[in-house]
Image 1 (spheres, one colour):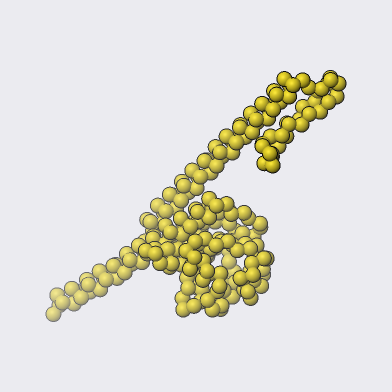
Image 2 (cartoon, rainbow, N blue to C red):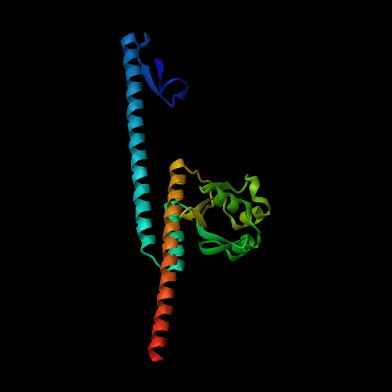
Length: 239
């Protein structure tokens, strides 16, 4: 019996192998070897097409999910409810175990909405002045992924994170009109790999959520002004 191995892929990028056993002691002829090489190439093409189809399908799912959550956020005009909705919808979108919306108020991080974060952890973050990770994410204007065990930028807050039990988290700025008005944080208790497409998705979500949040605040402000104007008009009619 003669066993022949034909690589699937080219050069150093070979990722698989086709194995053929010949029951004849004479082995395979040149025509057989050419046929085997063609078979390996066909396997590579088929797998490549399948991977591309999966990538396109995954991208479509991301686009659909972003469109759905954007529509839901845009229809919500109560700021607290909007933030809670953002947190709840972020969990399944990024297969996360926890999520929160943070804002920098006077150099301290306040949580406006959260899921599955303990009060002790929220208080530990709030007690810090200008947390470096949050500041960098806000200044960079893009998503930042942090590994709790290895990221040296965490400083003393690492102990609180390890106690809380998550292994990594991502921060995405909530932006509107070029201004960062908050941070969306999603946390994973187990190792999690962020693809470039996932990072693009959470950045896009941060932008859409920031716009929805700004619109909701403007709506509440106009509603307050309208109520004040009505009170003034009612007072004037009595005079």
